[in-house]
Image (cartoon, rainbow, N blue to C red; front, top):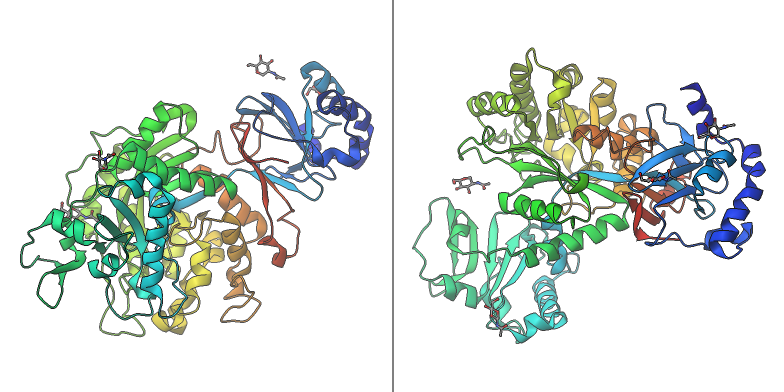
Length: 596
Ligand SMILES: *[C@@H]1O[C@H](CO)[C@@H](O)[C@H](O)[C@H]1NC(C)=O
Ligand SMILES: *[C@@H]1O[C@H](CO)[C@@H](O)[C@H](O)[C@H]1NC(C)=O
Ligand SMILES: *[C@@H]1O[C@H](CO)[C@@H](O)[C@H](O)[C@H]1NC(C)=O
Ligand SMILES: *[C@@H]1O[C@H](CO)[C@@H](O)[C@H](O)[C@H]1NC(C)=O
């Protein structure tokens, strides 16, 4: 222990002593690049199996071990970390001689952190939302429909296989009528106006999951429609014909294109490329449909899953209990795929007034929001899932939703080993003071999204009033009550950059530095420290997904997932954080993004 610790912070003198030896290795490896040119050497995809990666000037490897130690270098063999320390210490001449490992230096000023995790995101939905960017133009007044139609047209023109075949279904995801300047719903006619789109089957799902907008060809393929649908809306034109918009239950009247592995892979690929470019190596998918999970399982079995996925299996309270029949997935595809948790929805969202509150909404005293899960359902389901070995992750936004779910957890957890079960509250946005205490006492994990803070801070007080607001996104209070926090973005709801979450968590200001409470941040007493935020993106999500033995920190014996950042996010001024670039992302010891 002692010796290991001593190693972790490299003394500059020992670094210097080993320069000669290093230059020797570099010379052999890289045709005599001198020290001054070390940043030019290429850490690229054909890196050898065993190598050492070092930061040049100082101990800039943030290991995120229990002591939050720093080190100069990480030694890698295959997928695993076999050494962490300084070149003069545990990675000394004897070690280098014995192993003949080449040494790569990261560029000046850079730092290394463990591969980061998004603890709450929607993988395939993000991909779908980017393939045809339906959100485009949301800030351009008066041109929204034209922009959307232009995105669809560009997508067709960019994909010759689709352009050439007018019966290929065009699928899009993510339109959001609440941000449109036009105060009307979209229709099939909007799509038929464009000569490239006209006549093609188009199906566009809304971001909130409540609506489908289709083209004339899709309407015709699904005709005839019933007159009215219980719990749904079939939008109609002046002649009384279906106009191409179906809301809520009426969405079931449109047959969605059957997902093929090819179409799913397209979506996955978009998300993975983006995620790796931001230094994300693990994604916790917050509500997997069975067909998406089956697809990830096939990818894992073929060894082609390009990122780590922790899947929360969606449970619809109307479906039959399956916790005793379905087997959790643990480490499929050489540790890439885990799915041992079930996701349920406790309530709705704050913005739409669906979050369940103890007291009425401040700006709408006629409602307290609503629960989507009854106490009976929770008392029936939660203990059963836990007993059958499933982690239970419940979406809870409002204080009443969080309280009721905690009540159900408390009853279910009585006398059981919480460390073995690790229940999570997804979002955990608004908490009463007593529930914050319970969080820590029960060992429930708070899965929170810091970029929601800097979005919602502008309107949330209108919704909740001046008192309750203090319990909204009160991250510091949650931690101070000894609860664990794990960080995510909820992409595609927010952008996927984990450094945006890091920045929001430690500053509580918008990207331009502003907040309703000024440049010092919105409720600044609730800021996380950089160390806490980094842990919330690395080791805490590993714990929250039962993978802390192999992931989440840079320690001997763990998988080598790491990120090389252009700057040291732990020390640079906060206004520099969002300018930080990911220089390389390494998974299982191999660079999967970037290089230097
Ligand atoms: C050199 O490295 C070896 C292997 O890691 C280790 O056993 C030894 O203690 C190290 N020596 C020093 C002086 O740190
Ligand atoms: C790397 O692992 C392989 C396979 O286990 C082993 O043969 C080799 O000696 C290791 N190399 C180093 C430098 O530890
Ligand atoms: C056009 O696409 C449809 C639907 O995907 C497919 O069934 C058909 O075989 C395609 N036609 C050609 C010529 O590729
Ligand atoms: C849950 O199941 C019911 C009945 O099968 C269905 O109508 C509803 O759409 C499902 N809810 C979700 C969110 O999938």
